[in-house]
Every structure is written in structure tokens, then in C-alpha cells.
Length: 388
Image (cartoon, rainbow, N blue to C red; front, side, top):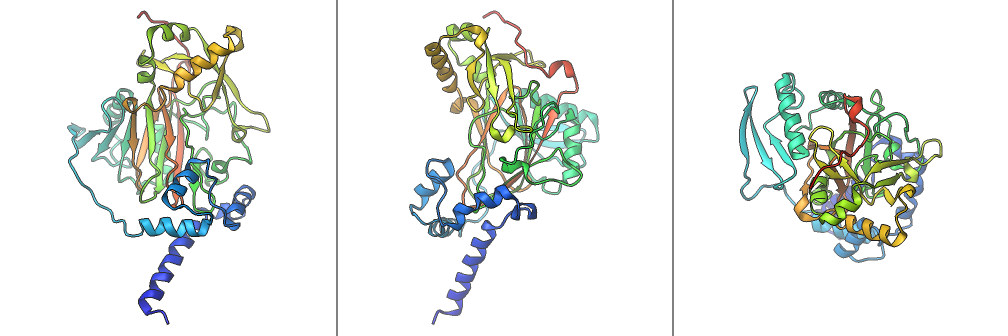
């Protein structure tokens, strides 16, 4: 007969497996899309191997049984404990009497702002101005220890930097697709918040380089992402600097691209009343506040150049491939590890991002808001030619 300790260990393992499998919101339990996607889990089939989540899972614990794979990976992670190691370099600054520590995540992009309470420390406009200038300079600013923020306080934080957008920015096209898991959780009183769930039964991660909603005629200026539940390892978000992507192109490629526009096409999950959104934007985009040039193309939504340019198919493929090689170069990117209460705010006009889909079967729950520029004249992407 198993000992008491063995039975307790077995019970603890079963409880952990049950927790990672439970929907993160009651609305998902009966949602048709969630129920349909859960069929694979009920059939004991692992995530599809060709997906990033499935590939990493197979590497971690090769098995044809989903349950065995879950048990194996959870066993590997069961003894992980929180801790911190090494030295962190930061710049100390004092703003409005508050001592902040600015930790650069990578030389050219990303700064973690330590020592601030986003619920109380932004009453002074000087602090908001400081954060906005830092955001323009570093493209992505991050915060930790903000798990006390309510959803309403998240909205207040977003509104200090611009106009609160709908779930995908502007309201000309508001997706209502039944095929996007991220649109299935409705937040009472905050319809503009997009909830991004992921559990063992129905894993979910936007694991491809993209800027948010570039299939809109006027894509959102910024996005804010709050982590409510994080895996113990994995599930980071990576950010890529589009200034660096543009600067890294050879001069002859820049000269060929700077007069072109590209077609941005949404997915079936971005449809509104069955209509897939399409927008045309300049390949080289002038940032309306800094005046600098960004490479405003990402392979997540861009498939081709506008037909009016008459770019031959072979040249089009070569140019798109050359631009794709710029996505995610380590020199242009930073990586943010999530904890409950972590927040990232990025400039959607000059930053790409992607989730790292390596955390299954652990749970991950995120909340997103978009921000529109107060100055409506700056919302439409444009390019003002520059001399090299």
C-alpha cells in the first residue's frame, strides 16, 4: 500500500494538473470556440508539433500522449523556486520627489522603470511627461510589482498617454470574429480591454513578429500589456526596434523601398461581420513625433507590395525576404520576462513584438489596452523622404 507521503505527492500532482487545465475565466467553459479547441486535449493528443508550443513540448518531453507530456513537463518544473541572481545596472533618477531606477534591457530598446506605483505616482503631469519622453526614446518601457492595479486603474494609466482605443485600436473596424480566442472573454464595464488566456487545454500565444492592428487604416499608437498570471519559466515577450531594422538595410535597398507601399491583411480572427480588414501603408514610415524612419513592414500581416508599383514577382519576394531577415535580429531586440503585475507599454509605430510560445502546459493570462494619439493628424502612417 502506498505510504501517506506517496499518496499526498500523487494528490498534489493531480491538483497541479487540474489547475493548469482549468479555464481562466468562467466564460470560456461554455464558449463554443474554447470547447471546440479542447477536443484535442480530450483525445489525449499533444499540441501540434509544427506549432512553436508543440515543438518545444516535444523537445522537453517526447511523447505521443498529452497526459504523459503534461506530467513530464510539470515534473521538470515542480521544484522551481523564485530567486534573483547577478548584478543589474540601472540609472538612478529622481522625478517629482520619487526615486526611480531605470534598468536598460538592451542597449537600444527597452527600459524597466523600478520604484514607481502606477496607481498613485502619475497624478503629477511632470511624471507623465517624463515617462512619455522615456518611452519615445526607448520605445518600450516596463514596470514590475503592479499587480495591485485594478482593470479600471489600468484604463486610467492608459488615458494619461492618449485616447483609449477599442480592443484593436480605431473603431472603423472592430473585429467580432468567433474564431479568435482573445475576443471571447468580455470584461464588464471595460469593453476596450482584450483578454488573452492560455491554459493546458487550449494553449494560446501570438508567436510571430507583428505590430498591433496594422491592417487598420490608422493603427493604434501604443499598446499596454498587463500580466495577471505567468508561467514559472517561458512565455516572455520579445520586442524588436524598427529604427534598427531600417538602419540595418543597405543603402540601395532603402532607396528601392522608400517609395513603396505594402498591403497589410488581417486574419480570419480580425474579421468584422465576416469581412477581412486590409490596409495599405508606406514601407518606410516617418515617426510623427521623432521624425525618424522606421521599417514599417512585418511578415505577420504583410504579404505583398501595392499593385500600383508594378514590382516584379521575383523582386518582390527578394525584397520581402530581405526585410524579413531584419525581424528579430538580436542586436535590435529585447526580451521581457513576465511576472504577475508586470506591465509593458510599447510604441506601435516603431516596435514589433512576439510572444515566446514555449510555456505549455503552464498557464498565462494577459490583459491588453490600445492607445490612440490625441493628435488625430498623426494617426495615419506616412513617409517624408530623407537624404542619406
